[in-house]
Structure formats: C-alpha cells, structure tokens
Image 1 (cartoon, rainbow, N blue to C red):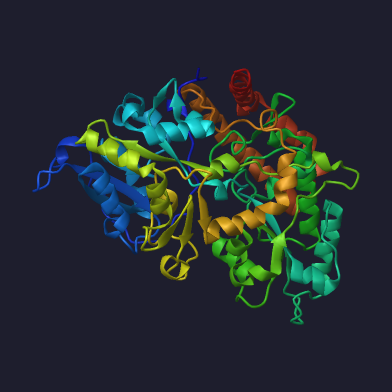
Image 2: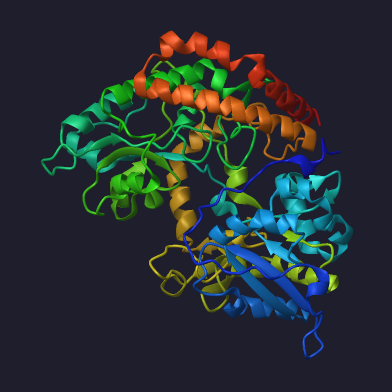
Length: 537
C-alpha cells in the first residue's frame, strides 16, 4: 500500500549543466511520426538529454543491439542540458512530449501533466527485466510507485555508486610538511587550519594558502552544513528529499535543521573560522570558477587545505595525490564515536528518475521491447559505460573491463562522450563487477573513510525516505512556505557566519523563524504525517 500520490512530488535529479551548443528537439508523440521505415520495420523515437554530444547516440554500436532486440529502427534526438532547460516548460505547455524520453522529466512534471505520461504498470508483463529490477531494488520501486502505477522508470548505475554524495577532504601533504596529525574534532581542525594559514605548508614562501574552502550554505550537494553530522544529526543532501528542503528526523520526531541548536553550533564554528581568516571572506559572493581556481590552481601548487566535494579527484584535479578524505569529525572530544553520523545520500546517488513514455507513442510493442532490452545486464553496461567490444570487454561471470584508452577521450575520466552514462535507462545489478570505472573507483575510495560513521545511521529512525511522495496539495504548501523560510533563514545564517553574533541573535532569529506567517511548523507537520505513514507500514 502506498502512502500518497507521487504526482504531486517535486523531486529534481541533481545534474551539472554543460555549456554546449543548443540542439533542436523535434520528436513528439504519436501522429507526428511515420510508424514504419521503408523496409516495413517499426520505428521507435527516443529523445535523450546529454551533457556531452561529441559522439551521437545513433553512431554508438549499442544502438544496433537495441534495434536487434526490438526488430525495429530507432530514431534518436539529442538535446543538451542548457537547451532543455530553456525549452522544457514551453514544450510541456504546448503538449510537445517525446515518444520516449531519457533524463527529461521528474515526478513534478508527472503531477502537472499526468495525461502525457504512460502508466508502465499496464505493460509490466512485457518488461520482465524491469520487474526483476524492482524485485531486487525495493527502494527504486518505491521511488516511482503510485498505488501500483508507474509513470516514470528509475535507473540503477550499480554498487560502485552506492556511496555518500558528499565528502570532506584535507591536504595530507600539508599535514606531513608541518608534522600534524589528522584532526578528529572541530577544535583540532581549527588548530590545523591555523597552522595551514601561518606556516607555509605549500612551501612557496607566500602567504597564499586558503586553509578551508567552502561553498554556499544550503542543504544540497557539498554543503558545508554537512558538519551537522558531527553533532549526531543525519543529513541527506541530494535531490529534493525532505533533507534538502531542511527537515530531519530524530527519535521519530520530524524537525527543522534551521531551528536546531546544532545548527547554531555549526554556524558559530564557521563564523569563528571566518573571523580568524581561515575561510575566505568572499565565500558567499564568488562564483564557481573562482572556487575551482582555488582548489585546483595551476595543478602544481596547492592553495586549499580542506574542502568538501564528490571525490578528491573531482575536487582537486592534478593535485589529487596530495588529498585524502577527512573522516567525519566529532563536535567535541568527549563525544562517543557511535554518535558521529554522515550524509546518508546513497539512494539518491545510486538511483535516478530517467525514463518516460508518451501514451500516444507509435509502435508501443516495439517501445516495450526496447525498454526491456535496456534493463538487461549487458545493454545496461553498454548504455552506461560504452559498447561491447568497442569500448568495454565482457570478461564473463558478470565482469566487464573498460578500455580506458578508447573510452576516456577528450581529457575525461568517464564515459559520457561514448555512452549515455548517467542519462541511461537500465539496471546494473550487484553481481556485475566493473573494472576501470574511474569515477566509481574514485568516489568509492573517497567514501571509505566515512563508512564507520555511515554505519552509525539508523536508516529507518534517522532518515526520512527519499521515496516519500507528498500529494500535490501538500507539495504546493511545502513549496510556498519554503520560499519564505529559506529567504529569511539562509540570509540570516550567512550573516551570522560573516559578521558573527549568532549566540546573541539566536533567540530573536528563532522567534522570527517560527512565526506562523513563515509556515515552518506547517511544513514540519506535513513531513511528520508522511514519515509516520512510512515507518508505520
């Protein structure tokens, strides 16, 4: 039994938009397409959003295998992230929905335009690979289950991505140069950062070190507020979960991060670091390129001591060998080890909402054959990592090896150029072992130091499930209140970090935050209702 209709959910998949050429989107459902090719075979029309379009999908050998599986032809349309962001709303209003869409829509789109999304539950007998996926991965099934109906299908990119999306890193070379130990508490971190500022750890004779680099405050990827886990509060900062909207659960009670005393402690700590010159004063005003120039610099001389990101390689580029994961810190030395938690975002990291079908799509039987083939093991591997044997070898017994010389092109260490990668539809089961998946290997290595703290998390009692789907009415209330709450609270917290005064100003801040006009308690009550239903199943 499901809790509520997912058609009202607002859940966006985090993606990094690439600056790329705009490409037209022409495919839309049903009568706009010829149903068959000159040879009489059915045509399936698929539109995919990609962030790299150097190699077109139609030219990938994996496409021919899909066509063989459906005994059909596939017409691919590609659109860049930037172009789709500009066109999406207008196309939905105009009813311009593609026959098959990959990485185009989320559950909020389903709630707004329900008649434009096929209910896959009526076709599950034709999708045995999807049924097996749902049996193996109950969380993935729950993410899209609307009282037994499925209007989107998720993907699973495999056990290599069952990791936290956020990690803290520290320059081990700097620690070694200064004879310092790895910090284990906030106080110890502060002392290490002071040494990074004053003792020239990069050895270039200049006072150019940035002891700690952080991004904007917020409840999203790589947020400095991940330090809430040091206090025993669990975060899940990815996607548009309850956690990314500012809510957590403790002892069965839903609460707001904004109103937590632990938040005051985190803000006070960052304010102290900034006042001591250990965090850049322009942290909240600089752009992403400035941040990257400080973490990666010229690839030779490190400028940053500590920062927060996905993997050390992604964060530091050619300087990666200097950095290691900073294990989750205790707020204070007397804190029991088991009270330290970490960002519990594994479900959102592993799974994504990806595949949609227009109810008016032509050749529906062929469409289902294509989709079922996509969710088979071999074609899932090919869809994500590259065609076999062109870029990936099938070693047998569920092991596959990426040919890095062929697959990693244009300076990239992933397969986005020659495969669909995270825009694929498919299921890579745990029985599969991928050799040379650099992205997974790097983030898994970064995750190792967080595993003990992640093991301290009670996933049922301390995490609001990402598969909870508020009704459309409740979602509108949550969103409307959130605008006012975020505008007030984030501005005030940022001011506290930059200017101090959190201890003296906290009570007044709480009084304004909890005013009925902002709707914070109303939002807490809504999430409490859904959480109680979820754990009561």
